[in-house]
View 1 (cartoon, rainbow, N blue to C red):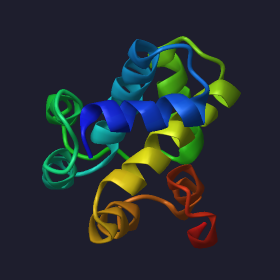
View 2 (spheres, rainbow, N blue to C red):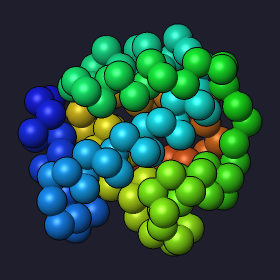
View 3 (tube, one colour):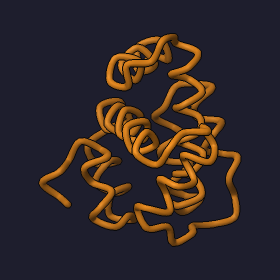
Length: 128
């Protein structure tokens, strides 16, 4: 998926005012996600996302942190300046687009590293 298509999908799902806002939200969510998964998984995911979003996944190199869903959303809210409920909306807009943009195997592998409570953010409530 090309960057413009990715951002258009995020913009539609998140009901953002501009492509720039969709890109900022996407970078924030992916940055928090990168801190949650292994560096190898971040590399695999980055390989399937368009530039410059792939670069966001390269930035967080501390190794995976155990973040429950609420802490994940709190960190997204902190990066975006939003309230937790808005952060959930933002995360869902971005991560469901990620699920559409990358291979099904990649999504499955990614979800295997996350608690089941993350599944609905990727548009997969049946896995919650």
